[in-house]
Every structure is written in C-alpha cells, then in structure tokens.
Length: 251
Length: 216
Ligand SMILES: Nc1ncnc2c1ncn2[C@@H]1O[C@H](COP(=O)(O)OP(=O)(O)OP(=O)(O)O)[C@@H](O)[C@H]1O
Ligand SMILES: [Mg+2]
Image 1: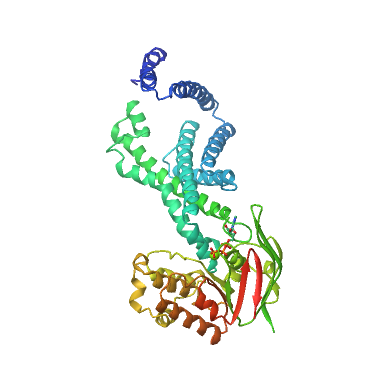
Image 2: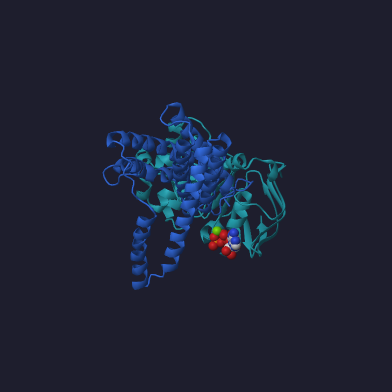
C-alpha cells in the first residue's frame, strides 16, 4: 500500500492550519480561538478513536462491538436532538429513529453479503449510516418547527373543521420528511461528477481498483437513501404530536 | 327553553391577562345570536373556547347535556364548527378545500352536494378548479364557509365572516345563514361590528371588557 502519512508529514501538513489561522487574524474574523479549539479537538478525538478502534478490532468481541455501535447511535441522537428544540421527547424520538434506520439498513447490507460481520466493517458503516440519519432527522426537526410556526393558521383551521391531528399535520410532516431526505437525493445525483465521496476515495487511496471501489460507493448511496428516509419518517411521525396538547389543540 | 350549550362562570386567562370574566350563558337550541362588542373585548376568545380550540381556565361548559371535557375534541369540533376571522384557504385549488371535510371523515366525496352548496352561494362548478390565490375576498369567504357546513354542525360559530365584504356578498351569506338556521335547525352565533347586522339581530349579545351582556 502507498499510504505514506506519518507523524512527520502530519506535522508539516499542520501548516495548512496556519493558513486558516492567518486568514482569520488578517481579516479579523475572530475565528482564531475556534480554529485552535477545533483542531485540537479533532486531533484528540481522532487519536482516541483510532486507538479505540484498533483495540476493538483486535479483541473482536460481540459485546464490545455492540457497545461501540450503541455509543455511536447515542451520540447521533444527542446531536439530532439539538436541532429539535421545542419538540418534546426529541431525544428518545431521535434515538429510536436512528436505532431503527441504522439497524434495518445494516441488516440488509449484512444479509445481502455486501458487508461482512466483522467489527472493522460493521463499525465504520454504522457510523456512516447513523451520522446521515442524524443529519436527516435534525433537518426534519427544524423543518417541523418552522412549518408549525409559519403555517399555524392553516393548522388551526383544519382542526376547527374537525380534523384529527395527523390530517391537520400531514402536509407539514411530508414536507419535513422531504427536507430530511433532500441532501441525500441531491448528492446521489451528483456523486462522481462533483465529488469523489469518502468511501471510494478511501479505497482508491488504499490501492483498490476504482471499478471495485465504485461498487462500494453504490452500496453507500443505497444505504444512505434507506437510512435518511427511515430516519426522517420515523422521527416526523413520532414528533408531530408534540406540537399539540392533550385537548388536541395546537400549542 | 332547551339549551344546546350552557356556560357557567367561565373564565379565561392567558399570560396573567384576565380576558374573560365569569361568563354565564344558556344558548337555546336553534337560536340565531348576533355577538358584538368593542375590539379586543374577548369575542373571538369566547367563540374559540366554545369551539374547543382553546380551553377555558375555569368554569363549566356543557354541550348537548354533557361537559365539554367528556367529548373527543375532534368529534366535538365537527358538531360545533368555528369559522375564523380572516380564514386562509389551504392547498392549491378550491377543490382541495371543499373535499377536505370528506377526507378527514374518510368518506367518498359527494360531488353533487358540493356543487349544490357552491351554487347556493352563487359559485359555479368552474370555481372548483380555480387556484385559491385567484379568488376575490368574497369568494374566499364563501369557500371557507362551505368547508364548515358540508357536514352540518349543530352549532355554527362565525367570526366576522362578512367583514370587508360588499353589500351583495353580505346578502348572499346572510340568506344562506338564515336558511341554515331556519330550514336546517343549525344554531348560529355570528360576531359582527356592522351596524346593520346588529340592528337586524333577533338575539343580541355583547362582550364588553371580557363580560357578557345578553339582550333578548
Ligand atoms: N393567547 C393570548 N395571550 C395573550 N393575550 C391574548 C391571547 N389571546 C387573546 N388575547 C388578548 O385578549 C383580548 C381579546 O382578544 P379577542 O381576539 O378575543 O378580541 P375580539 O373581541 O375578538 O376583538 P376584535 O373585534 O378586534 O376581533 C385581546 O386584548 C387580545 O390581545
Ligand atoms: Mg375577534
């Protein structure tokens, strides 16, 4: 393999950070502190994860692998929740949605034989699925919040006509699901034309035949569509009720 | 006299603001009430409480012999139907609006019934496919009202539905409301600021600073 990055080369590559830092100082962007904190966090987190994954892959224990997946899903849900300010139970909803979307997608990949049941495949793929599901749910939550605010009068009128909560919310729910899925669909359309995404870039980097690498990318495209659609639909159908009170009135 | 709705000592407070004070009101079956009072006195708030769109802070509200709390809010609102002050239409076309009552009841759309209702208020079949953004204020108001009465409610609560309309549009709506009240037995309560409508009232009620005064 032609993988040449080492501590020395990283040290020199750190000059790239100085470029960003220099621009921030020069243009008085006030981002210098954020850049330094961001870089230090990235280094610490990635080194930790690197050693942790190395350990997990070597031990190759089912429970340890599951624990790591649980940790990823928990963190993803926690981050999605932050976009859902004002939505009651945003965290458990996001947790369930990410858990199911990750579980189902991963299950299909394993059953189809696309990935193998070993920690070094399961864990990175779980991370990709969960993080995309997380972004989709975060977008969907934000869309629910803004639509229930902007379309308040329309919702009230549907309720006044004797609509149940789902019928009063369905247009909003559908739009929020669409919003959650949109980035995945958009990037599926441009994949390979604009960006060479991480999965295939990584494989090509590691010396894998591009024709083989793109097959993994096709798999990734499939799995992200499934993850974001499942994540969005579950989250939206569980979350819309929290905009109403027990008397079925809009809060 | 049998009351279809009775309010006893109803109060409403929002954010430390006391909006309605000790409302006592027995509304007879089949009444046609005109409700008036200064702007900001609490008329819309009162109707929204009666429509279960908001909940009273204290007191009792009895509809058809049962306290409001004993009803499922969704089924209740089909019996006590509220038409908003300045309603918005939803979807794209008039059809999206007038088929909504059927959709929420999971019933097949009764095209003839819709056409009859449209015709009664001077709108033709071609209105159905009209985009809602193209409707005039008077047409919009009539379409909004049709949504409330395709399935007849027991009580119809109308919040300034004739405000801003010309004489002709007003007359169309008045005639229709009279028909619903007299021929179909719907109890109607209509909020208005209009001097003519107040003068023509059979039962006049007034909300002043959150208190109700009813005159026969
Ligand atoms: N949720 C609320 N929070 C705080 N104040 C409210 C709330 N709802 C209504 N109010 C206030 O209560 C008062 C009565 O409002 P309401 O809409 O019932 O008046 P109205 O009699 O219908 O007036 P208009 O004739 O102008 O329509 C107003 O001062 C209004 O600002
Ligand atoms: Mg009002």
